[in-house]
Length: 123
Image (cartoon, rainbow, N blue to C red; front, side, top):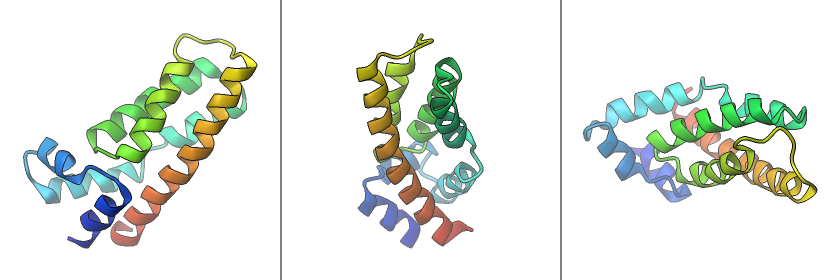
């Protein structure tokens, strides 16, 4: 399946993702389509921009779970690190803010790339 091959090339652990859906590629692809409707990334990004870190944590944690379940490795690694920085924080130090921005910039690219691949095949 071209979609899954393209995701693999990008670094998505498609085999683990499909295995999580009891080996059913069609079910995995169906849930990849649902990923396109998830609003966690935008919510997280907006919350970070507004320095609402507890809310940003909730969005990041949700996105981490969704990406983890779908084995979207490039995004999962970045959002996992971001989640840990935001955990139990009302404010961030300058160095934490810098790291959050670096991760957000990297995630914007990797998330956007995954969404673009999915939209090419599913939209």
